[in-house]
Image 1 (cartoon, rainbow, N blue to C red):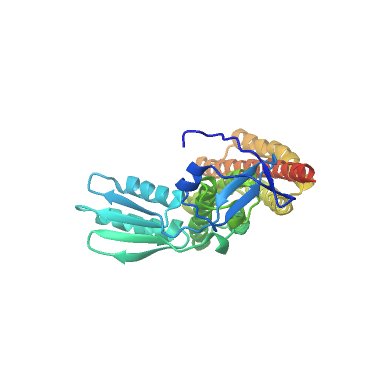
Image 2 (image 1 turned 90 degrees about the vertical axis):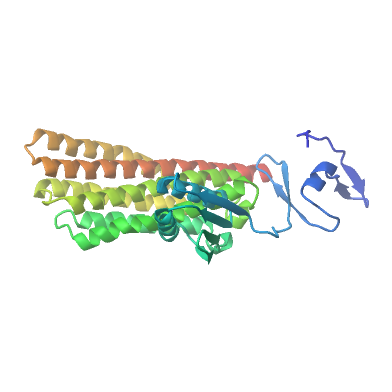
Length: 346
C-alpha cells in the first residue's frame, strides 16, 4: 500500500453503534475474510492498533547454507540471529568439510537456546525447530529466573574469596549459560512483538513501552551474570588466595552489592519506585567504598597477582551495582508510565 495514513468516516448503525471501514488494500494484504476476527488494542495515546487475530497456519522457516569458507563463529552468529528474529524452523545445509560447524551449532543449541531441538537430520542437512511457546515462559517469569540464577552465582562466587573451591567456581562459570538461554529467549519474544508476530499480552506484558523497558532490563541482568561469572573465573585461575584484609573489604562490598541487587529485584517485581530510588542512591554511596579499596590496593605493597585478582573482582562488583542502578531507573520509568496510562484511561 502506498498510503500510510487513510481517512475514514465514522458511521452510526443500529442507533448506537459506531463503525469504521477497513482499508481494502490492507484487508487484501493480510488475507482477511468476512467472519474473521481482528484484535483492537488501545494504545497509551488512546489511538487504536488493529491486528488480524487469525493464528499463523505455517511455521516460519529459514535456510542457512554453510560451507568451508564460512568460519564456525560466523555460522553460530547466523544461526543465533535466525533464532532471535523468530524463525520457528531453521534448516541448515552443510557443504564440504563442515564437521566443526555442525558441532558448534549443536553446542550453541544445547547451551544457549530454550526449546530448540533437532527434528530431522541427514548427511548434509540438519533441521532445528523451536518448540517452546511464549505462554509457557512469559517475559516476567524469565526475568525472575535470570535474577535468581545470577544472584546465586554472585553469592556463591563471593563465598570462594578466602578459599577458592575449584569445583564450585567451575559450576558457577557454567551457570552463565543458563542466563544466556533466558536472555536470548526473551529477546526472541520481544522481537516477535516488535515485528507484530505476537501481541504484548501473549508474552505477559501490557504494551510496547513495557517491552522496550524489559529489553533493557534483560540486557542488564545478562551483563550481571557475565560479571558474576568473571569473578568466579578469576578466582578459579588464581594460584593464591587474596589477603585477609583485602578479602574482608571485598566481602563487605560484595555483601552490599548482593543486598542492592535483591532490593532491585523487589522494586522491579512490584514497580515500586520508592525502592528503586533507594537502589540508585545506595549505588552512588557504594562507589566511594569501591574507590577506597582500589586506592588501598595501589598504596600498599600487594603481590601483583593478588592485586590483579582483587581489582578485577572490585571492578566487576562496581559494574554489577551500576547495572542495578540502570534497572532501578527503568523501574521508575515503568511505574510512572503505568500511572500515566491509568490517568489517561480514566
